[in-house]
Length: 54
Image 1: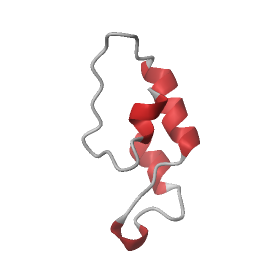
Image 2: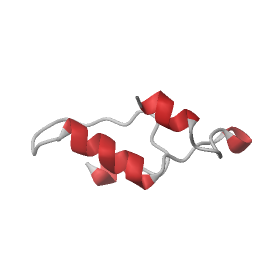
Image 3: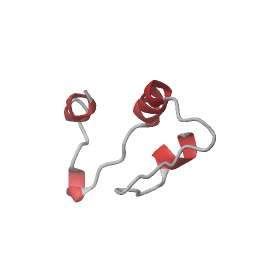
Image 4: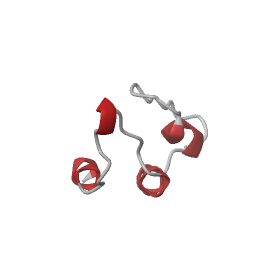
């Protein structure tokens, strides 16, 4: 689903970079529902959007 959403963003891959839109980050974090004490990793961290939202 994530790759499908990314393919629909017109600016995906411009200059070899991609910034995941905040509404997609929020949706993914809402689906995963991390809890206090969970270990979270974002190996492709750019602006730390997933870590901040989690």
